[in-house]
Image (cartoon, rainbow over all chains, first blue to last red; front, side):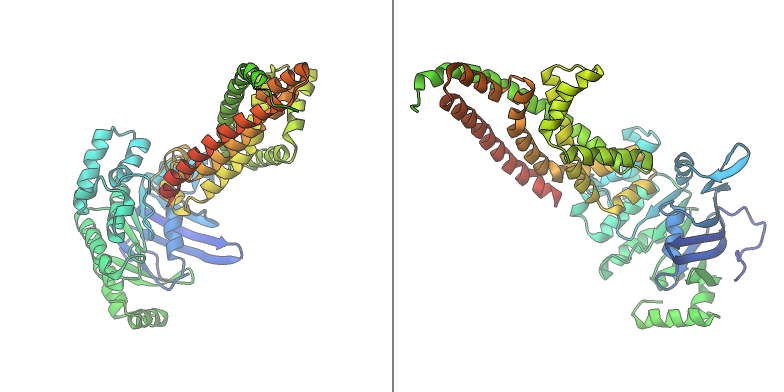
Length: 271
Length: 219
């Protein structure tokens, strides 16, 4: 396996540290001893064929899946373990709740709350989980809607929006909790081609304007190239190759990376 | 046997008294069934098998035995264990509990119809389990099930005569008393049927309206 971090040791403490991570679904082993670090503010693109475990990593970071073995640390604290009586024990729901505040996620299928207006989608969690007063939560939500270019849709219901608009609202919803880490799980895969660009534009601005750490699972190689500081190529639950986008996309050294990129280009994706 | 209008008019006030009680019992039992059914449905989904299993067993047990037997049990057997309930209370508990096992199934289906992504989005926005139920899952799950719940309300209403078996003076019991003392059955029983039919027809109209209103909303 390639060394975990491409950046020099001691730059700063990693914001995410994944060590010997294992994940099985029944008899199917998805991740088998995966390790890598992510530095604060880093923009990471996870690429690779379907079933290579990329999405599973994001879902484990968001605590939507349990881990089968190994360890994840987020912001210096173990995610799935906690201290009790001087020993490390599996995390309980309270610990997971405490840890989740660091992390936000945007889903392939948006998962907006269909019974709530755009504005209420964004203010719900800040009001419930942080006790923000409505006025403050709404003011912040309007700022975020402005940033994603949907201020005029604040009162609309999700069903009245296009896919691209829904996804921009979903991004605003995740940002409303001010996470330090944002996870983007194939956020443009469910969109009509002409709606992809508006979502990518929002993400580019976000990447340029904030120092949030971002992990992106995508099949948009062109976007990964532009967006990421570092690209990880996954196959069968392992990192086959990683490095800056120029290196991965123009001079991939590993044969499997080359094959994957050739196939993606043949399938009509932009690189 | 001749239909006697004078007798019919004479007994109507007594039967209407019974109807009032029937409606009250229906309302109270429906509230018990609606609330307890939701508790059953949520409890059966609990992570802990110590909660989910006993509740599942209880629900299947209640649904698998006749309401009349349960009513007898609550009213005539429990006093032996020192639990003495007035007929009305026993009736509301019995009917509410019995129908709760049916509404629980309606809730279960409604809850399972909420997309998995909604649970995940709630988790990703760090809502607690309780907040997820209250603000994300139930507001989406309940409206589409309202017509099905209203259906059980009508069924429950029509089963209230069973409570005459535990001495509740609802409409059917009043009619029986009238019949037993006057030896005339045709007027009291016909009137009971007519009153039930009238109420059911109103409920059916209401149900159609609910289906229209919330069926659309569900889409």
